[in-house]
Length: 381
Image (cartoon, rainbow, N blue to C red; front, side):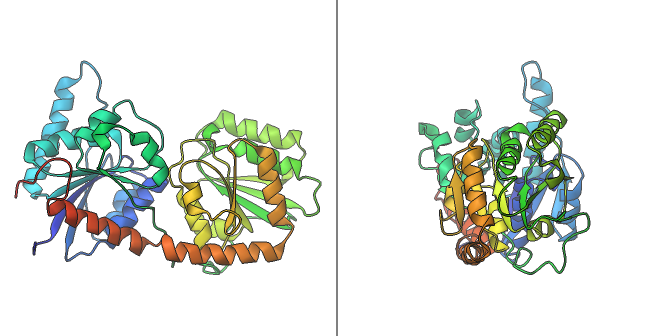
Protein backbone atom coordinates (compact mmCIF):
# COMPACT_ATOMS: atom_id res chain seq x y z
CA UNK A 1 0.00 0.00 0.00
CA UNK A 2 1.53 3.32 -1.10
CA UNK A 3 2.10 5.79 1.74
CA UNK A 4 3.77 8.79 0.08
CA UNK A 5 1.71 11.30 -1.97
CA UNK A 6 1.27 10.73 -5.71
CA UNK A 7 2.96 13.50 -7.69
CA UNK A 8 0.90 14.41 -10.77
CA UNK A 9 2.13 16.62 -13.63
CA UNK A 10 -0.81 18.24 -15.45
CA UNK A 11 -0.81 19.92 -18.87
CA UNK A 12 -3.30 22.58 -19.98
CA UNK A 13 -3.76 23.46 -23.66
CA UNK A 14 -4.79 27.03 -22.84
CA UNK A 15 -3.53 29.73 -20.48
CA UNK A 16 -6.83 31.55 -20.05
CA UNK A 17 -9.82 30.72 -17.87
CA UNK A 18 -12.52 31.22 -20.49
CA UNK A 19 -13.11 27.67 -21.65
CA UNK A 20 -14.79 24.76 -19.93
CA UNK A 21 -11.72 22.52 -20.05
CA UNK A 22 -9.59 24.96 -18.07
CA UNK A 23 -12.32 25.52 -15.50
CA UNK A 24 -12.70 21.75 -15.11
CA UNK A 25 -8.93 21.34 -14.69
CA UNK A 26 -8.87 24.10 -12.08
CA UNK A 27 -11.62 22.50 -10.01
CA UNK A 28 -10.01 19.06 -10.25
CA UNK A 29 -6.54 20.20 -9.20
CA UNK A 30 -7.78 22.47 -6.40
CA UNK A 31 -9.98 19.78 -4.87
CA UNK A 32 -7.53 16.88 -4.84
CA UNK A 33 -6.77 15.43 -1.43
CA UNK A 34 -3.56 17.33 -0.67
CA UNK A 35 -2.18 14.68 1.68
CA UNK A 36 -2.51 12.05 -1.04
CA UNK A 37 -1.67 14.05 -4.18
CA UNK A 38 0.80 16.78 -5.12
CA UNK A 39 -0.22 18.55 -8.36
CA UNK A 40 1.96 20.66 -10.65
CA UNK A 41 0.42 22.29 -13.73
CA UNK A 42 2.19 23.11 -17.00
CA UNK A 43 0.52 25.98 -18.90
CA UNK A 44 1.44 27.31 -22.38
CA UNK A 45 1.90 30.84 -21.01
CA UNK A 46 1.25 33.00 -17.98
CA UNK A 47 -2.40 34.02 -17.67
CA UNK A 48 -5.55 33.86 -15.60
CA UNK A 49 -5.41 30.08 -15.14
CA UNK A 50 -1.90 30.26 -13.66
CA UNK A 51 -2.90 33.16 -11.41
CA UNK A 52 -5.93 31.33 -10.06
CA UNK A 53 -4.01 28.11 -9.46
CA UNK A 54 -1.16 29.84 -7.65
CA UNK A 55 -3.68 31.67 -5.48
CA UNK A 56 -4.85 28.22 -4.35
CA UNK A 57 -1.30 27.08 -3.59
CA UNK A 58 -0.80 24.99 -6.74
CA UNK A 59 2.62 24.97 -8.42
CA UNK A 60 2.52 26.22 -12.02
CA UNK A 61 5.18 26.42 -14.75
CA UNK A 62 4.85 27.97 -18.24
CA UNK A 63 6.05 25.90 -21.20
CA UNK A 64 5.01 26.71 -24.76
CA UNK A 65 5.00 23.52 -26.82
CA UNK A 66 5.72 23.94 -30.56
CA UNK A 67 3.44 22.64 -33.27
CA UNK A 68 4.74 19.28 -34.48
CA UNK A 69 5.46 19.77 -38.19
CA UNK A 70 7.87 18.29 -40.77
CA UNK A 71 11.22 20.03 -40.64
CA UNK A 72 10.93 20.95 -36.95
CA UNK A 73 12.46 17.80 -35.49
CA UNK A 74 15.12 19.75 -33.58
CA UNK A 75 12.75 22.12 -31.79
CA UNK A 76 10.25 19.32 -31.14
CA UNK A 77 13.00 17.13 -29.74
CA UNK A 78 14.03 19.92 -27.38
CA UNK A 79 10.45 20.13 -26.08
CA UNK A 80 10.41 16.39 -25.34
CA UNK A 81 13.76 16.65 -23.56
CA UNK A 82 12.53 19.61 -21.49
CA UNK A 83 9.47 17.68 -20.31
CA UNK A 84 11.66 14.66 -19.62
CA UNK A 85 13.86 16.84 -17.39
CA UNK A 86 10.80 18.19 -15.56
CA UNK A 87 9.57 14.66 -14.93
CA UNK A 88 12.91 13.54 -13.52
CA UNK A 89 13.60 16.68 -11.49
CA UNK A 90 10.10 16.69 -9.99
CA UNK A 91 10.10 12.93 -9.41
CA UNK A 92 6.59 12.74 -10.87
CA UNK A 93 4.56 9.54 -10.69
CA UNK A 94 1.85 10.27 -13.24
CA UNK A 95 1.08 12.63 -16.15
CA UNK A 96 -2.37 14.05 -16.96
CA UNK A 97 -2.81 15.79 -20.35
CA UNK A 98 -5.79 17.46 -22.05
CA UNK A 99 -5.01 17.82 -25.76
CA UNK A 100 -3.30 16.17 -28.74
CA UNK A 101 -0.23 18.40 -28.72
CA UNK A 102 0.66 18.12 -25.05
CA UNK A 103 -0.20 14.41 -25.12
CA UNK A 104 2.31 13.86 -27.93
CA UNK A 105 5.21 15.60 -26.20
CA UNK A 106 4.40 14.48 -22.66
CA UNK A 107 3.66 10.95 -23.87
CA UNK A 108 7.06 10.60 -25.53
CA UNK A 109 8.82 12.02 -22.47
CA UNK A 110 6.82 9.88 -20.02
CA UNK A 111 7.57 6.73 -22.03
CA UNK A 112 11.29 7.33 -21.55
CA UNK A 113 10.76 7.20 -17.78
CA UNK A 114 8.10 4.50 -17.72
CA UNK A 115 5.61 6.95 -16.21
CA UNK A 116 1.89 6.29 -16.90
CA UNK A 117 -0.07 8.99 -18.71
CA UNK A 118 -3.81 9.67 -18.74
CA UNK A 119 -5.28 11.79 -21.56
CA UNK A 120 -8.42 13.74 -20.65
CA UNK A 121 -10.69 13.87 -23.72
CA UNK A 122 -12.90 16.98 -23.84
CA UNK A 123 -13.87 17.06 -27.51
CA UNK A 124 -15.91 14.82 -29.77
CA UNK A 125 -13.88 15.89 -32.83
CA UNK A 126 -11.57 13.20 -34.14
CA UNK A 127 -7.86 14.00 -34.47
CA UNK A 128 -5.81 12.38 -37.24
CA UNK A 129 -3.25 11.32 -34.63
CA UNK A 130 -5.74 9.68 -32.23
CA UNK A 131 -4.44 6.16 -32.89
CA UNK A 132 -0.81 7.17 -32.41
CA UNK A 133 -1.52 9.17 -29.27
CA UNK A 134 -3.50 6.34 -27.69
CA UNK A 135 -0.38 4.19 -27.87
CA UNK A 136 1.37 6.72 -25.62
CA UNK A 137 -1.44 6.65 -23.04
CA UNK A 138 -2.12 4.29 -20.17
CA UNK A 139 -5.72 5.46 -19.81
CA UNK A 140 -8.18 7.91 -21.38
CA UNK A 141 -10.73 9.87 -19.38
CA UNK A 142 -13.81 10.66 -21.48
CA UNK A 143 -16.13 13.41 -20.22
CA UNK A 144 -19.09 11.57 -21.80
CA UNK A 145 -19.94 8.08 -23.02
CA UNK A 146 -20.77 9.68 -26.37
CA UNK A 147 -17.04 10.18 -26.97
CA UNK A 148 -16.40 6.44 -27.12
CA UNK A 149 -17.35 6.56 -30.80
CA UNK A 150 -14.23 8.67 -31.41
CA UNK A 151 -12.03 5.91 -29.97
CA UNK A 152 -13.53 2.81 -31.55
CA UNK A 153 -10.20 1.27 -32.53
CA UNK A 154 -7.80 -1.29 -31.09
CA UNK A 155 -5.23 1.11 -29.61
CA UNK A 156 -7.88 2.56 -27.27
CA UNK A 157 -9.49 -0.75 -26.30
CA UNK A 158 -9.66 -1.20 -22.54
CA UNK A 159 -8.24 2.24 -21.83
CA UNK A 160 -11.39 4.42 -21.79
CA UNK A 161 -13.19 5.50 -18.62
CA UNK A 162 -16.07 7.99 -18.52
CA UNK A 163 -15.91 10.62 -15.78
CA UNK A 164 -18.48 13.38 -16.27
CA UNK A 165 -17.55 16.97 -15.52
CA UNK A 166 -18.43 18.29 -12.08
CA UNK A 167 -19.96 21.62 -11.08
CA UNK A 168 -19.37 23.75 -7.99
CA UNK A 169 -22.74 23.30 -6.30
CA UNK A 170 -22.08 26.18 -3.91
CA UNK A 171 -21.14 28.72 -6.58
CA UNK A 172 -23.95 27.55 -8.86
CA UNK A 173 -26.92 27.32 -6.53
CA UNK A 174 -30.46 28.68 -6.85
CA UNK A 175 -30.76 32.17 -5.37
CA UNK A 176 -27.02 32.14 -4.69
CA UNK A 177 -26.48 35.34 -6.70
CA UNK A 178 -27.96 38.25 -4.69
CA UNK A 179 -28.77 40.47 -7.69
CA UNK A 180 -28.35 40.40 -11.49
CA UNK A 181 -24.85 41.45 -12.61
CA UNK A 182 -24.33 44.92 -14.05
CA UNK A 183 -25.03 45.24 -17.75
CA UNK A 184 -27.89 42.75 -17.89
CA UNK A 185 -31.24 44.18 -18.85
CA UNK A 186 -34.57 42.48 -19.35
CA UNK A 187 -35.62 45.22 -21.80
CA UNK A 188 -39.25 44.57 -21.08
CA UNK A 189 -38.95 40.82 -21.65
CA UNK A 190 -41.29 38.64 -19.60
CA UNK A 191 -39.07 35.58 -20.09
CA UNK A 192 -35.30 35.77 -20.58
CA UNK A 193 -33.24 33.09 -22.33
CA UNK A 194 -29.48 32.74 -21.86
CA UNK A 195 -26.93 31.05 -24.09
CA UNK A 196 -23.33 30.87 -22.85
CA UNK A 197 -20.90 29.79 -25.58
CA UNK A 198 -18.24 31.25 -27.85
CA UNK A 199 -19.90 33.11 -30.71
CA UNK A 200 -18.89 31.02 -33.73
CA UNK A 201 -20.77 28.97 -36.35
CA UNK A 202 -20.55 25.54 -34.68
CA UNK A 203 -22.24 26.93 -31.55
CA UNK A 204 -25.43 27.63 -33.53
CA UNK A 205 -26.44 31.01 -32.09
CA UNK A 206 -27.94 32.00 -35.44
CA UNK A 207 -30.42 29.10 -35.16
CA UNK A 208 -31.36 30.29 -31.67
CA UNK A 209 -31.92 33.84 -32.93
CA UNK A 210 -34.04 32.40 -35.73
CA UNK A 211 -36.06 30.43 -33.16
CA UNK A 212 -36.58 33.64 -31.19
CA UNK A 213 -37.80 35.28 -34.38
CA UNK A 214 -40.36 32.50 -34.87
CA UNK A 215 -41.68 33.32 -31.39
CA UNK A 216 -41.60 37.09 -31.88
CA UNK A 217 -45.36 37.36 -31.81
CA UNK A 218 -45.96 34.75 -29.14
CA UNK A 219 -48.04 35.13 -26.02
CA UNK A 220 -45.07 36.29 -23.95
CA UNK A 221 -42.28 38.71 -24.80
CA UNK A 222 -38.91 36.95 -24.87
CA UNK A 223 -35.39 38.32 -24.47
CA UNK A 224 -32.07 36.63 -25.26
CA UNK A 225 -28.68 37.02 -23.57
CA UNK A 226 -25.79 35.74 -25.71
CA UNK A 227 -22.80 35.39 -23.41
CA UNK A 228 -19.42 34.36 -24.78
CA UNK A 229 -16.24 35.44 -26.50
CA UNK A 230 -16.81 36.77 -30.02
CA UNK A 231 -14.63 34.24 -31.84
CA UNK A 232 -15.97 35.11 -35.31
CA UNK A 233 -17.00 38.72 -36.01
CA UNK A 234 -18.52 37.78 -39.36
CA UNK A 235 -20.72 35.21 -37.66
CA UNK A 236 -21.81 37.75 -35.05
CA UNK A 237 -22.86 40.07 -37.88
CA UNK A 238 -24.82 37.18 -39.40
CA UNK A 239 -26.64 36.62 -36.11
CA UNK A 240 -27.43 40.33 -35.83
CA UNK A 241 -28.72 40.39 -39.41
CA UNK A 242 -30.93 37.37 -38.65
CA UNK A 243 -32.31 39.20 -35.62
CA UNK A 244 -33.05 42.31 -37.71
CA UNK A 245 -34.68 40.25 -40.44
CA UNK A 246 -37.01 38.62 -37.90
CA UNK A 247 -37.75 41.87 -36.08
CA UNK A 248 -36.18 40.86 -32.75
CA UNK A 249 -32.93 42.88 -32.83
CA UNK A 250 -34.01 44.82 -29.75
CA UNK A 251 -34.49 41.53 -27.87
CA UNK A 252 -30.96 40.16 -28.40
CA UNK A 253 -27.98 41.24 -26.28
CA UNK A 254 -24.40 40.26 -27.11
CA UNK A 255 -22.58 40.35 -23.78
CA UNK A 256 -19.15 39.16 -24.91
CA UNK A 257 -16.99 37.19 -22.50
CA UNK A 258 -18.25 37.42 -18.91
CA UNK A 259 -16.35 35.99 -15.93
CA UNK A 260 -19.57 36.03 -13.87
CA UNK A 261 -21.21 33.14 -15.70
CA UNK A 262 -23.24 32.12 -12.63
CA UNK A 263 -24.72 35.61 -12.50
CA UNK A 264 -25.61 35.62 -16.19
CA UNK A 265 -27.35 32.24 -16.01
CA UNK A 266 -29.11 33.24 -12.79
CA UNK A 267 -30.55 36.29 -14.53
CA UNK A 268 -32.27 34.03 -17.08
CA UNK A 269 -35.47 32.02 -16.79
CA UNK A 270 -34.17 29.18 -18.95
CA UNK A 271 -30.90 28.27 -20.65
CA UNK A 272 -30.42 27.20 -24.27
CA UNK A 273 -27.44 25.48 -25.93
CA UNK A 274 -28.01 25.35 -29.72
CA UNK A 275 -24.63 23.84 -30.74
CA UNK A 276 -24.33 22.12 -34.11
CA UNK A 277 -21.19 20.09 -33.36
CA UNK A 278 -17.97 19.91 -31.37
CA UNK A 279 -19.45 19.52 -27.89
CA UNK A 280 -18.30 16.83 -25.48
CA UNK A 281 -20.06 17.35 -22.15
CA UNK A 282 -20.79 21.09 -22.03
CA UNK A 283 -20.27 22.59 -18.58
CA UNK A 284 -22.91 25.25 -19.12
CA UNK A 285 -25.63 22.58 -19.15
CA UNK A 286 -24.79 21.21 -15.70
CA UNK A 287 -24.09 24.73 -14.37
CA UNK A 288 -27.57 25.80 -15.45
CA UNK A 289 -29.06 22.67 -13.90
CA UNK A 290 -27.24 23.37 -10.62
CA UNK A 291 -28.79 26.85 -10.66
CA UNK A 292 -32.23 25.31 -10.97
CA UNK A 293 -32.76 26.32 -14.60
CA UNK A 294 -34.43 24.11 -17.22
CA UNK A 295 -32.25 23.60 -20.30
CA UNK A 296 -33.07 23.24 -23.98
CA UNK A 297 -30.06 21.77 -25.81
CA UNK A 298 -29.26 20.13 -29.10
CA UNK A 299 -28.42 16.44 -29.25
CA UNK A 300 -24.64 16.78 -29.60
CA UNK A 301 -21.88 15.15 -27.58
CA UNK A 302 -22.98 14.15 -24.12
CA UNK A 303 -25.90 16.55 -23.63
CA UNK A 304 -28.28 13.57 -23.55
CA UNK A 305 -26.27 12.17 -20.61
CA UNK A 306 -26.76 15.40 -18.65
CA UNK A 307 -30.38 16.27 -19.41
CA UNK A 308 -33.23 13.99 -18.42
CA UNK A 309 -35.45 14.54 -21.47
CA UNK A 310 -38.82 16.03 -20.57
CA UNK A 311 -37.91 16.08 -16.86
CA UNK A 312 -35.06 18.58 -16.46
CA UNK A 313 -35.20 20.03 -19.95
CA UNK A 314 -35.52 19.19 -23.62
CA UNK A 315 -33.19 17.82 -26.30
CA UNK A 316 -33.72 18.78 -29.95
CA UNK A 317 -31.98 17.88 -33.24
CA UNK A 318 -28.97 20.09 -34.11
CA UNK A 319 -29.79 22.90 -36.52
CA UNK A 320 -33.57 22.58 -36.13
CA UNK A 321 -34.70 26.11 -35.23
CA UNK A 322 -38.33 25.01 -35.41
CA UNK A 323 -37.83 22.36 -32.73
CA UNK A 324 -35.88 24.87 -30.63
CA UNK A 325 -38.73 27.36 -30.91
CA UNK A 326 -41.36 24.77 -29.96
CA UNK A 327 -39.54 23.68 -26.78
CA UNK A 328 -38.67 27.24 -25.79
CA UNK A 329 -42.28 28.30 -26.25
CA UNK A 330 -43.47 25.38 -24.09
CA UNK A 331 -41.22 26.47 -21.22
CA UNK A 332 -41.80 30.19 -21.69
CA UNK A 333 -45.56 29.72 -21.48
CA UNK A 334 -45.54 28.04 -18.06
CA UNK A 335 -43.89 29.44 -14.93
CA UNK A 336 -44.90 26.26 -13.10
CA UNK A 337 -43.24 23.98 -15.66
CA UNK A 338 -40.00 25.95 -15.51
CA UNK A 339 -40.02 25.85 -11.71
CA UNK A 340 -40.71 22.11 -11.62
CA UNK A 341 -38.06 21.24 -14.19
CA UNK A 342 -35.56 23.58 -12.56
CA UNK A 343 -36.02 22.00 -9.14
CA UNK A 344 -35.53 18.52 -10.58
CA UNK A 345 -32.50 19.72 -12.55
CA UNK A 346 -30.85 20.93 -9.33
CA UNK A 347 -31.44 17.55 -7.69
CA UNK A 348 -29.96 15.77 -10.71
CA UNK A 349 -26.86 17.98 -10.61
CA UNK A 350 -26.42 17.26 -6.90
CA UNK A 351 -26.77 13.52 -7.44
CA UNK A 352 -24.60 13.02 -10.52
CA UNK A 353 -22.48 16.07 -11.34
CA UNK A 354 -20.80 17.40 -8.21
CA UNK A 355 -17.12 18.34 -8.20
CA UNK A 356 -16.66 16.00 -5.25
CA UNK A 357 -17.86 12.99 -7.25
CA UNK A 358 -15.70 13.99 -10.22
CA UNK A 359 -12.56 14.38 -8.10
CA UNK A 360 -13.02 11.22 -6.03
CA UNK A 361 -13.51 9.12 -9.18
CA UNK A 362 -10.41 10.64 -10.75
CA UNK A 363 -8.38 10.01 -7.59
CA UNK A 364 -9.54 6.38 -7.66
CA UNK A 365 -8.27 6.07 -11.23
CA UNK A 366 -4.90 7.54 -10.27
CA UNK A 367 -4.54 5.00 -7.47
CA UNK A 368 -5.47 2.12 -9.77
CA UNK A 369 -2.88 3.28 -12.29
CA UNK A 370 -0.20 3.48 -9.59
CA UNK A 371 -1.11 0.00 -8.40
CA UNK A 372 -0.51 -1.45 -11.84
CA UNK A 373 -4.05 -1.41 -13.32
CA UNK A 374 -3.09 0.34 -16.53
CA UNK A 375 -2.98 -0.61 -20.17
CA UNK A 376 0.20 1.25 -21.08
CA UNK A 377 3.65 1.71 -19.67
CA UNK A 378 4.87 0.38 -16.37
CA UNK A 379 6.09 2.65 -13.61
CA UNK A 380 9.72 3.19 -12.75
CA UNK A 381 9.22 2.91 -8.95
